[in-house]
Amino acid sequence: MTQQFGFIFVKSLFVPDGSAFESSMASYAEALKQLGGEEWTSDEMDDTKPLVYFMTTGGTEQELLNIREQRSKTVGHEPVLVVAHPAHNSLPASLEVLARLQQEGATGQVLYLNSSSDKQGLKKIQDVLTDFQVASELKRSRIGLLGTPSDWLVASSPDHSTVKETWGPDIISVSLDEVNSLIKDVAQDTIPAVRDPLVEGATEIQEPSSADLDDVVRVYFALKQIVEKYELDALTLRCFDLVLGLKTTGCFGLSQLTDEGIIAGCEGDLVSTVGLLWVKKLTGQTPWMANPAQLDEVNNQLVLAHCTVPRGIVKDYGLRSHFESDLGVGIQGTLPNGPVTMLRIGGKNMDLLWLAEGDITQSGKAEDLCRTQAEIKLSEGQISNLLETPLGNHLVMVQGHHLQRLQGWWKQMIA
Image (cartoon, rainbow, N blue to C red):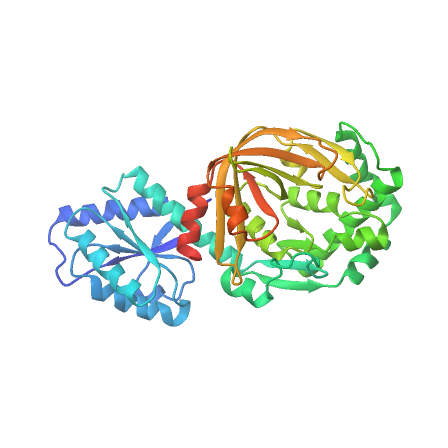
């Protein structure tokens, strides 16, 4: 992810003389420019892109406080990123000023470069700037709530203001009447272009009829129109009402939208949809939302299961009925064995987090669980926490080990 940010050299009255110091600062400036930065002056403090404070020497603490106060008037109280280097008392000045800011309730961190060619240090700066970009994108995001959260999500139905205040996205409420109307208006001749590739790619089709397949494509088209009309970055659908009212399912539509880059959650679960959107933006990987259906505390492993999965992350898939209702179309995907990370956001203010990582050891096709199933053995995190301090039902899973990356963002932006 290419970063665009500003950096400013924070200077004191005691700037060292000589070309060696100037050459050193120029090399740091060039390194930051290679990351996508541009050098700012005090006249550019109202730019909303992230700002990095580069502490040139000691004695710069008050100057940084002055710059931050000026910037806060237009940008607000953003986390403070202070870059220190090994010479001219840059590091002690950085520690002193961040300590003062944290006493006042600010968040931030000191990022240390042992030279202008410090690859590990520059990578850390790049990661932190990515964190800032993700936080900024979340604040500009729009999540559609189609219907209301399902009645059983008694711990996963936050106020829209809570989502906004803690995570940033705006929640856009859309009635199911509008969704149902759009489903009914889908023209029959538009269906084959989507249905036929779905059918051709399946390893098997058991319960669904041709009419069932047509109906789930109609749902997909309706959801896509909602996305375009309301300019949504993500949505979550009270999908069981489709089962009860129209005898069809949203499983394919949610899967297809997610594969197209529009995060789509089930059951009107806003909490999990925020988690899906967050992990997608931070890792770039396509996430999956599922139920923790079975667990084993002794071996620290669990089984996740759900009736939909993005087809882009499975090795193959079959088309089955929706598990609970035996209606419509569910997707029975085979997830590849290998590393994964899981998370669950929770708490009244959506400011609690469970994180774990491990490996998928096998996929399943048990007939008494939702259709896509994955057994995961944890290497970091504890299954017992889910029982002792649960944050809710659904978990979010993403391929690859990203626990430290997610945890770092969380501590900086939410905790």
